[in-house]
Length: 251
Image 1 (cartoon, rainbow, N blue to C red):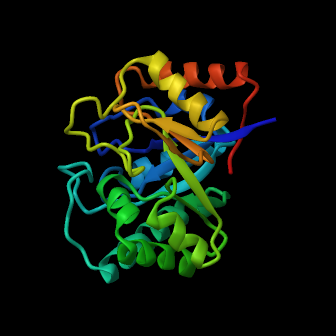
Image 2 (cartoon, helix red, strand yellow; image 1 turned 45 degrees about the vertical axis):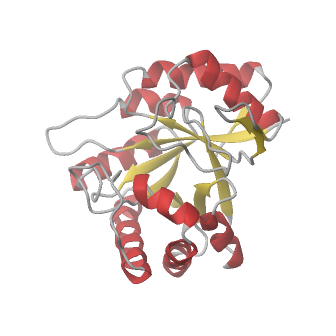
């Protein structure tokens, strides 16, 4: 039987500002990537989200981002590999403290937003991030864009890696994600997103907007928790994968 991890970026509220429906979406995922306070989240949100994940037996991962609350971590900021290393180590440590307090164990690390995309194509940043993960805890799984510089850097260090694909994002012919500011970058039609997910899992391919098929490895699938229909889509993809005979469990 085919198996895949279904992950979601959560804990992205901040203070009185609420984003997403974390408690409901936990029912349909196997891994939670929890914001660590730099692009979203705060200490209270972090701890509450850790509790939710443990209550639902969902694997916990750190979701470190660039220090850009206003831009939600989606704006490129020029940083050095040394800065990237420290950003990652700091944020993993912050979340891990709450995980330990609640009696849990951290499972993985997935960089967020612009930092994630930068690490996908910049070997220097990718190596810095992978080194930070390995130095903090070599047992952690490093999530990265399928076939990216980040997963390659992790493998080189002997880390367990998970090639990530996206249910609701379009791909360019080089395997990178189409920038969000371009038309068609975000897939809004459920049927199209589901077809893409099934193709990626079963055929290990994805079709670009130009109609070209490229190879892809789908170890873990990301669904976004901040959209207006996030919970509905999470339930739909969970049911659709189950109907296809694809089991869902953490990596």
